[in-house]
Length: 626
Image (cartoon, rainbow, N blue to C red; front, side, top):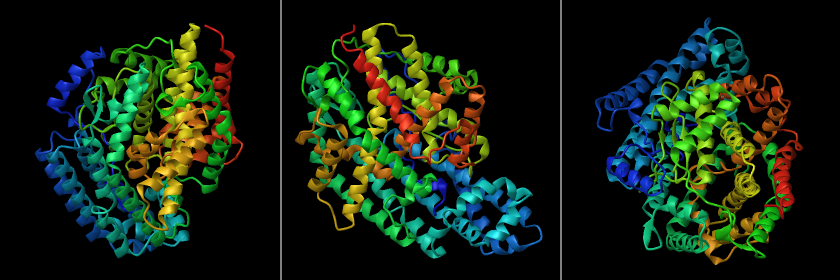
C-alpha cells in the first residue's frame, strides 16, 4: 500500500525544451498547423535546479520524518481516546498535506523527464527524485496500516461526526485494502524495492521506446509520427510505415519480452503475498469495481464482436474494393474523401464551441488550458507518445499532452484529454486524498467531451460523403475504445496466466497477441506475420496492468449517459457536474443512480454497444449515396 504520491506517472507529459520547441515550430509550419502551444511548468516549479524545488524536497523528507515521530504506533490510542474524531482528523489532515507536497514534487519530476526520456540529465533528475520520495514516503507507510487495524466499530464512531467525518469516504475506501495489507516491514520493503523493481522496468521501457527510430520514406521517425503514417491517404505510405514498425519492434523483441516477463512475475509475487486470487483482482480493487461487473462487460463486448468490429471492417473492406483489408489499412481514411490538415486554432475552436454548447462553464474551464499554457501539443524527439491529462495536485492544476498532427482524430483526442482536464479541475476541491477518480469513472468526462465534439460536428455536416467519413471515423474510434481495449485485456490475461508456468518466449507472446486480435477484428482484417510484434509498444501493459478495460467501461457508460442527455432531461448538466466534482469521494454506483443507470446490471452494457451498432447500421444504409 504505497503512498499515492510516488506512484509512477503512467504517461507523463513533457516539459519545455528550447531546441525541441524550434524543431516543433518548424514541423508545425510545414504541416500548416499554425503555432502549437508548449506548456509552462513553472506553476509547479521554476526549474530542476531551482531553490524552490530543492527546498520543497528537503521539507517533504523532514515532514515525513516528523509525522512518523508524532504518530507511529499511536493511532489505536488516538482512536480510543475521548476526542477520537478531532485527534484522528488532525492526523489525516496533516497526512493529506504531506501527500499534496509529495505529489507536487513527483509530478514535476515526471513531467520534466517525459519531455525527453533520452536526455540523461532529465533521467537522473527523475530517478533521484523518485528514489528520495520513495524513501521519504516509507515514513508514512504506517499510517494507512494502523488506521486499518482500528476496530471497525471504533472507527465508525469516530467518523460519525466531527473533523474526521470529512475524511470518511477516504477511510471507507482505505478499508477495501484491509484484507490485502501485509505486516509493516514487508510493506516497507515492497515500497523501497519498487525503485529497483517495477519502476525501473517502467523506465527502461520508456527510454527504449523513445530511442527507437522507424525509417519511412528515407526519414528516421519516432514512434508517434510513424503511427500517424498509418492514417496517411497514400496506401503505399501506410504499408511502408507498418513494415518499419514491424521490423524495428521485431529487432527489439528481446528487450520487450524481458520487460514483459519480469513485470508479470513481479506482479505475480505481489499478488501472491497479498492474497489476490485472480491476475486482475488488484486492478479491480484499485478501480473500486466488482470483478463480476468487469466480467459482464467483457462477455458482452466479446459476444458483440460479430455485430461490431467484424461487421464494420467487412463494410470498410467493401469501400476499398477488397475482400479483406491488410492490417495497416484498418484505420486508413476512406477512399475518395478529401483529407485536409486541421490547424491548431480550428481544433481549439471546435472543441470549445462543442463544450460551450453543452455548458458555458465547461467551456470556460477548458479555455483556461489554452489561455494559461497548460497544453503541450507538438511532436518532438524523446517526447512521450500518445495523449493524456495529468492531474498533478489539487493546489496547482492539470496539464494536457497531445501529439497534434492535424488529423481529424487529433481533434477528437484534444476533446478527450480536455474532458479529463475539466474532470480533474472539478474534482480538485476534494483534496489530495479524495480528488483522484477510480479508472471506472476517470474515462467518463473524456469520452463524453469527445462525444459532444463529434455530435456537434456531425450536426453541422450536410455533405453525404463527409458525413459518412465522420461516422466511419467515430465508429472506428469506438471500436478502438471498446472492442480493441477488451481484446487488450484478454491478451493481458493470457500473458499473465501463461507466465505463471514459466517465462514466455517472444514467439509465444506473439501467438497470444495474434489470437486475440484475429478473434476481435474478424476475417475482414488480414493479420500477416508483420503484425505479430505490435503488442510491444503499448504502454498500458507495462505501466498499469489491466488498465485497458476502463476505456471500454467509460465508452459504454458515456453512450448511456449521452442517451439520457439526448432526451433533454431537465437538470442533466447539473447532475453531470456533480458526478465529476465528486472525484473519488463516492462509488460509481451511487454517482450513476441520479441518471437511472446501473452498471451492475449485465444488460446495462447493451445500451452502449447498441449505439455503436446503430451507427454501423446508418453507414450501411448510406451505401449508394453520395
